Length: 154
Image (cartoon, rainbow, N blue to C red; front, side):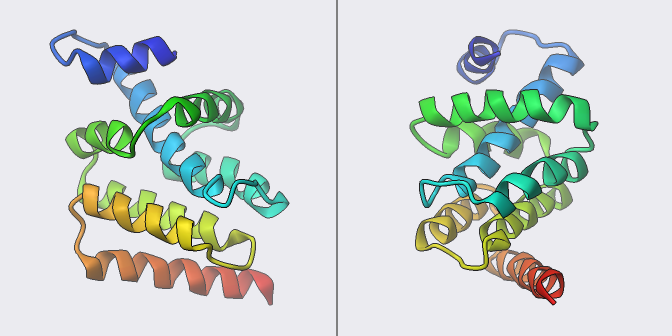
């Protein structure tokens, strides 16, 4: 899977099937979510519980595929050198609503453990910039995630 991802990013002339393209995009999106989870160098229990749910809802995946995707995304994230590796493919293939939903999922993960780490914040803000989202869109997604987190806590 990782070799195919490198092929996808490194050799755009190589034609991919629709299924392969979807797999690569899902891996890129999941890797970005893993970036947020691992920003503070540990995955809390709440983050671990929320991650599969967010992947299922954000990427419209069934729960059977999610655990393999998480495993592959962890490997991909560990080998990555920048967010650009993941955001480039998403920019080329996601519409604005899909990008916003991914940013919302990133904020939800960041707030899942009850506090926002500065590194989580930096990763999400940088990702939003690489997605060419407006600052107001970033803040709107953050506010939604904060409200949801407060409702879940009460």
